[in-house]
Length: 109
Image 1 (spheres, helix red, strand yellow):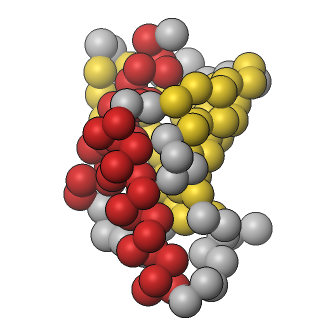
Image 2 (cartoon, rainbow, N blue to C red; image 1 turned 90 degrees about the horizontal axis):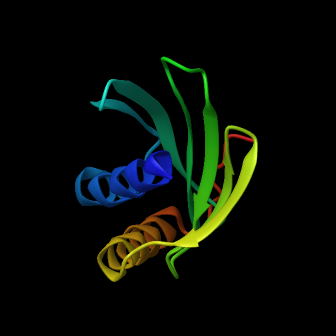
Image 3 (cartoon, one colour; image 1 turned 90 degrees about the vertical axis):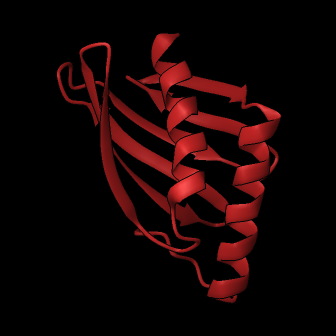
C-alpha cells in the first residue's frame, strides 16, 4: 500500500510542474526506494510507467480526468481514486493537453 500512496504523490506533484503536453521522465527517492517513471498523455488519460529501481517492481498506471487510477503495480491489478486536489490537477492537465494537441494521440504505441 505504501507504493500506491507514493504513486499518488507523484501524480499530484507531476501535475503541478509538468507542461501540458510532454513525455516527462523523472525520478524521486523516498524511504530508501528510488522511483523512476515516465508520464505521457494517452487517449485522454495520463499514463505513468516506471519501476522501483532497488526492487525492479514495475508499474503502469492510467489516470483519468475523474481521478480514477487503473493499472498494474508489480503485476498486480490496481483500481482506486485519488483526492479531489489530485483530480483537479489531472483534469486541468488533460484539458490543456487536449486543446493544444487538437485531438492528436501522443501515445508511444
